[in-house]
Length: 68
Image (tube, rainbow, N blue to C red; front, side):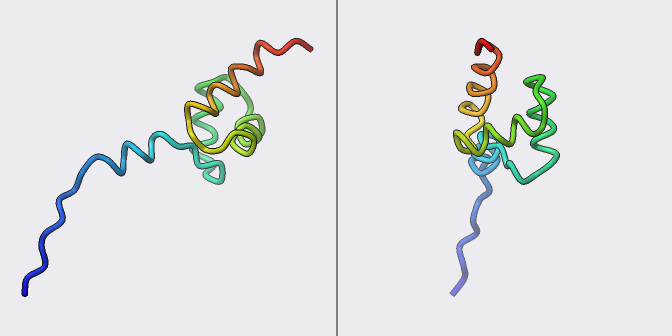
């Protein structure tokens, strides 16, 4: 009995791009450069709000507006 060939989709790649891997230095550095924040600030944001890229970027943007 033959096994059905599984087709490749872009879904996995799209899901991966929607996340920030806090343990991967290259992803942290990319996000830090993109948002003009430090790498520790990005890691802190990932720890605080999770690894969803939109939430992380929103958290980092909110820190700019915070008085103090």
